[in-house]
Image (cartoon, rainbow, N blue to C red; front, side, top):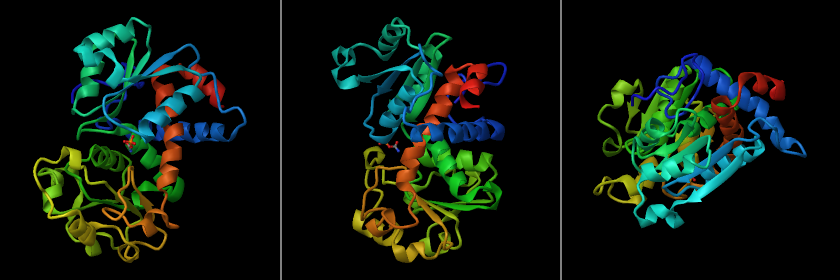
Length: 324
Ligand code: CP
């Protein structure tokens, strides 16, 4: 991906990928999210940072968590937010993506939050919008889900603080997972001590070793002494042909059960970006158990998305005033 997401002065203009972003910027996102998370506990859950700005959610693919938390984040920043229903929009009458964008721009939109089933869609949109419009990637094909990765990093920091001391294991369908790709980039940028991926050979990308991860095919070895366990859904909608004998067999080998989790450190946290498939990649006893922070991840999504939206659209001076 080639589009520059930063301004000449190094500020975020778009947020398309973790790739190319430096540690201080990722840390700044988490620090700002820390300030914004307190707003959710106030009686009036709003700050006027993006008052007068117009944000359009463009979700070409289904979503529960990302779409809703982006909408809540925009509202808490006092922006005007519209979630366009693509199925009932004029895209279904043959209007091209570029024409849809130009029409939304003509309504003086300031930001597009884009989810699309094709890798590179958010970058394509960023290349074709007016210079003042920011684009945030809310998940594109198998490529990237950078705001998910940042809310995951924020959740890890809340529990574990010091990234270099950590051993993190990501289990499952790495091959089709935009979340795993963005998480690995963020974990590496933040200096995590050891990043492991645990998966059958058929669910690993061929360039896996170049990602700087340790590869395991066996859960017993891969989970030993890890601090953070991240499980992933099987992305059946992106699989071409059968890559697994059956979901039952997958669960036996790679499903996160209480027994397998006991191999990790006793204070290990369990994460999942959602949606979860109980009895496929994770047992209910683990998903709902004391080590699970899965719903916390969802809550943190609001503050992290507020941080990213305000950093792309808000002026620095305003930001300091409101969050100081
Ligand atoms: N984690 C995630 O992207 O969930 P949704 O598909 O529900 O947005």
